[in-house]
Length: 209
Image (cartoon, rainbow, N blue to C red; front, side, top):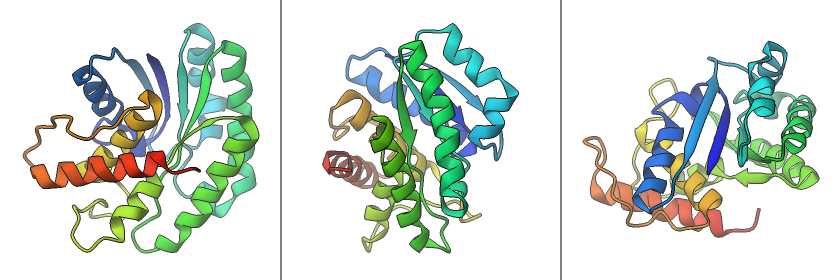
């Protein structure tokens, strides 16, 4: 599977594409990936810069993953949808499928998750895009009493646990396979943490959007 990721630090931090590829490899899948990332970038910025549209056009991808600037779907859902439509047209023309990286709310404003989820799912339904409900998985885990810390100290970016949870959701959706029991060797996460993250991702991926 060949996947192009377009986004910012929410995708780049802890190398989410690499985490997904490692899971895929452990299950006998081959995954090639490329990341086009810029700190704090919106999809509109990527579109105007030109590197991302060029990459879509020049290579035959299976999926192109779009990650919008993390608060834009809350502040301006219409703008987010316009940005995604721009890319979706180019993605479909190239023969690839659009996947939307539904991200998480800031730590201090968990109530904004609904706006994020609604924005991504509504435009996803409109375009027939694949939704990667990472933020929904975060929301599910954060309701539990004992869980690994997902937000970094800035209350926005992911810890390794947060990125790994997102990567597990990606794997579950794109490969239609449970990430449960995939080995993950990390000094920062216990085996129980890893199992909880994998289980939460799989449960979330199986729910209807």
